[in-house]
Image (cartoon, rainbow, N blue to C red; front, side, top):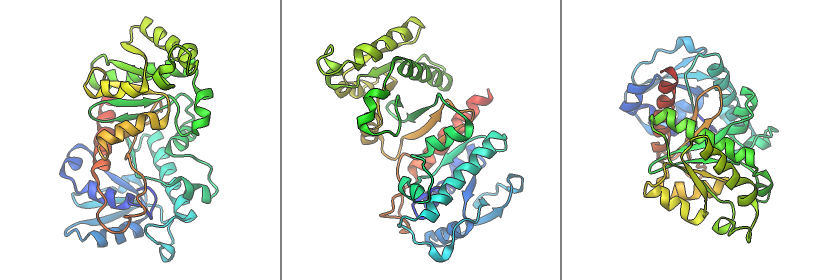
Length: 324
């Protein structure tokens, strides 16, 4: 359910009352029952209740009676929606850890995560920069990627949550090639079609033949050429200020972007609350909302569940494709 004091509990409940979600999945909320009960009371949803469980096998999957795997890790006397606390930072990580263990043991088919707060997590003494790093640690994954699924195009990041000053030295030939291959394999598996892939440059004008930087010459262009030799339909490096418009008008299906904001700013501008974060390269399926904890609106009852609904849909889609 994400950070207890954010909008995660609210969007989780709102998503589960969606009729389409109950047609495609058997959802279980991993979180704190007390927090969810308070959230449900605030939302005033007639006929909706919670079913606390201690293990997955106890889930009943009854419409409008939401199964809650209760970790009971929030002191409700200290609970303050919309505020940051180390208690909730720790709790939010424990929800993710529990979900990962259940997925690895095949007790659940996929994970959809609510938003967590990096500062709250750090306050709790846990040095994670986000969900991706937690997932990588517990699944012992080294070659993974942050994929964002949306209309009108998908985005895969070469680097993830790192400072902008560190991006350049984190870009190399093998990393770019790996991400192009991951983009191709993932999209082909989900759509059944060979995707058209655009690879963004790092520098303005894609380096202008080395005038504004050498990353395109040393790493990005050679990786694109190697991918083309392997039969992958990819083009690049393309100037970052042009590549997303080309994807928007559907010349490309997916953009391999070099760093977080390069890919996420245009995507969220076009598809905010409709894009879904998928961690690929893991032995388990994980999707997530595309927004933060929303502390400014937490506990007020008007958080938008659209991204959570879409994230559950994409999790179900990936889970079904894995079963084929």
